[in-house]
Image: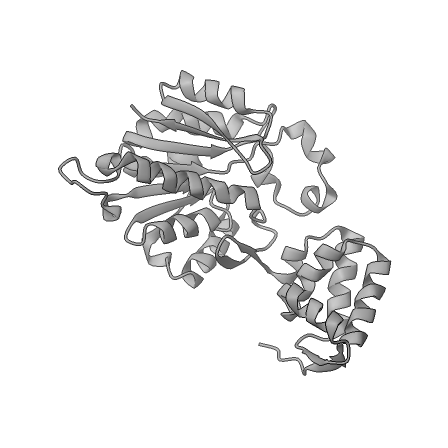
Length: 308
């Protein structure tokens, strides 16, 4: 590990330098995120410096290095999360790189839906019929297209004695997920499987009590219209949902009746304008209780269904 000497400057000097960087372009919120994640200077810390501009501060990373990252972000539309190598999501700080999608805040709601369904279901199907209380040890769940492993980490945290499966087609993504699951202390309870969606989990078919997925759902012809920070840097494999954006969702839904345990739940994230189509796909496969769920902006962003 390379250790940089601390750079000491006053709050006034740092705030002046920050203003200079913003004159190059970009948004203050993004720059403050960089200062927080790369240099440990939180928004509250910045506010303290505004109130006490003569207070000294030690930067663990030279300003020249921070400026280089900011310029690369502006010139190449490179995601700051990739440049720093990590991001925060839910309760986790995790490593990210170009092999995986950067976890989005709205995807956190998949975990909230999963825990809500488990609590409402009671002892069936999340524990044996003879049990009177849910038994997390009996919960076998799967995260399809795990990427960074964020959903798998959150599910393993939600049910500390459960066992999970995390699937991805990309070997590089699984390597990233392995690091994050290990760092979160849940790697021993999550089995990584390389392969395509539920087809990769055939040995566990009929036993999966919860399946979650944030699959690629952008129509192929729309990929080039995405913001350059996404289009030019995040993995196309995790974005491209085929001609209408629903190819991966159809594949998952087709196998779901065989893969899910009786009463098992399937939870999917999709594009905000795909809700009716996704629910129709799930219904056609014989799943029941097909419902849409809203994101924080009121969009129909998620779908759920249950195996009879």
